[in-house]
Length: 457
Ligand code: UN1
Picture (cartoon, rainbow, N blue to C red):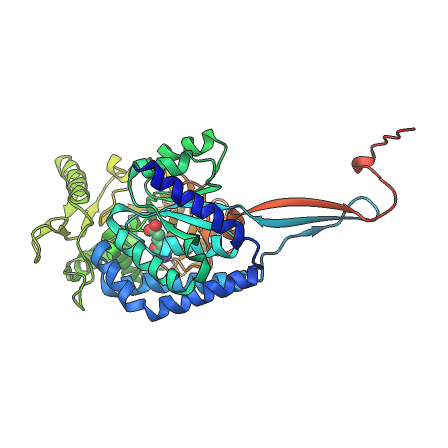
């Protein structure tokens, strides 16, 4: 790593953030509005970059740019809504108030699978909140980062440095985490990555926002509309070649509909069109790397060696021999297998039956991760149980929708090994600001809180 280069990036970021934070938030929002306009103009070109690097199919790449545009719109509105509470003071002639101030520099580490949207979640909020960003994209998707930066540069006038790209791998990520000048580290990636970097940031008592792995499950109840359910499962389990942190990995199906559901899934998985992501009708592109393919195959082999029923999962030679296309795998398990406890970033769907909804919810929660979850049911008692405090323990809980494909308006993130962070919508903006509690005495006396008496005479 070039230390001088890194220091330069940080210095430029400090300079620009000290100016940017003085601009009124609604004016900062205006820049983000223009950025959104630029993304709209460049939508097709940016989507092409995503398809080129992350190998997503066209509609998903366009969807990802749309997610970035949606974030801009959200942040523009937010730039006039960075509300602080006013609380009643217990003392006469006093006001108690929260002020929200920018934190400075956000260090943003993103993964290959959402090379633009996750940056937009972070940047749009960070920017309207008055901060600059130093972005270390995945080495797989530096071109996507450059594409986005170009869009920012074209509208940002004096504030081009608000977004700076710092390319690299682990060493560069560690440099950001160790650096006291970085006021928030926001990182997306595997739980393993999170466990490596969190102690580094914590050692300097820095702020960290983590969006790590998921091991997402869906429950299919007897009353489920199976047409809708199969569609939801297919997209969540196989879309993006199973490489979303929200991808569906485990399915618990009520025993009365298990056979029917599995038959339909088999047919559906068989009919999915696997092919070059640039082709109009392709639904599943290749895995990102040979390593991903090898990991997927190791897991499937270990299952087959134990006699577990695995359908699909094989490599398909399509066009480029250096790319790793696979048929999604359906794995029918009779009991919870060890392999199900880990997140394999590939299209593998484990299917198990259940009898009692409470057992299904228990199995769903009984993993280390806690990102996304779904229930397919038309029974309000089941869906409300699933959404209650005794239901899903995940950050995202859906009814009659798959586990993936969240909208930006809600807070995104999960519990346990998923890292506990929340990004994107709702009040996630608070992560990018520091809170000041201000108590103002506008009277002529000095009453102390809690009725304490302290008279200097
Ligand atoms: C991720 O995979 O890191 O909910 C993010 C979804 C997308 C974001 C996924 N909107 O599937």
